[in-house]
Structure formats: C-alpha cells, structure tokens
Amino acid sequence: MMKRRQLFLEAGAVVLGTVWLSDYLVRRTEIMTTSNKTFEINKTEEEWRSILTPEQFRVLRKHGTERAGTSSLDKNYEDGTYLCTGCNQPLFTSETKFNSGTGWPSFFQPIDGAIETSVDKSLFMTRVEVHCSRCGGHLGHVFGDGPAPTGQRYCINGVSLQFVPA
Image (tube, rainbow, N blue to C red):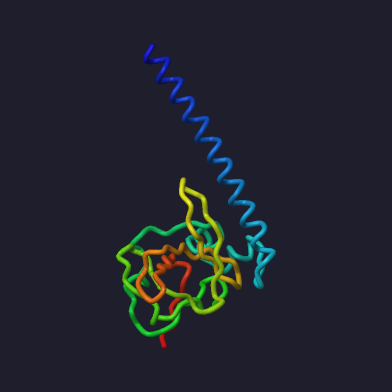
C-alpha cells in the first residue's frame, strides 16, 4: 500500500513539474519575442550571440542570473557610470551604488529613462524585473528594501553592466 501511495505521489509531482516548466518556458519565449519589437535596438539571436559572451547572452537575452558574489563590480566603488553591456546605454551612476550584502551590484536609483520594468512570476514568486530601456536586456530585479532616499534596491547582474570610470 505504501509503495502504491509513494508511486502515486511521485507521478503527481512529475506531472505538476512538467506543467509548470512548460508554462514557464512558454511565458519566457513570449516575453523575449514581443520585447524585441518595442525597443530601439533590435537584433536577432545570432547577432546578440556574436557581440555578447555566452554568460552575458544567458543573462541579458534569456533572463538568467549570475551566481552571487561572482562579479567584480559588486565591490567596485570608484566614481563612474555603469552602462548596459548590450547597447552601452548609461544605466546607473556610482553616486547611487551601495553595498547591499547580496553579492550583486546594487543601486538605489537608475538614471532617468534608462530602465523599464516588467512583472516576473518565475520561481514560484512575483518580482519586478529590470530591463534596459534601449535594448530590452535583462538586468536584474528591483526590491523595496533599499536605502533612502528611494527605498529601492536595484539588484543587478554584473555581466549586464560595464563600468566606465569618471
């Protein structure tokens, strides 16, 4: 009896997991397909692959996340500007950067007009995803637990950024 119950529970978990994964993949594909039509810079997947490293492509174009603590930009506190790796648009200034302790570069405010947001319902939670307003590249997420004056924490993947010293 216990073996039948365990088998039933495992089969149910597989079915639920398959349904969730297929829904997730369909939603991600729809987001990437439609977002390229609304941004100033549009490139094919092959064109993006030719100008980005594999990790940059995975994060910027496929909504991936780099491992926490792997970006040298997390602990960079030089004066300068952080640009989008995909299109070189200025996104954040060093004046708005702070150490959030999360392992990703964090900022309390973007440059005006530099980013757009969308709702991200992946990984069984709802978050606000941050994109470059020029190329639509996935940068990271924004949370409401940042410092004054905005109270926002823009938690950004380091591979999505390039730093230009002042």
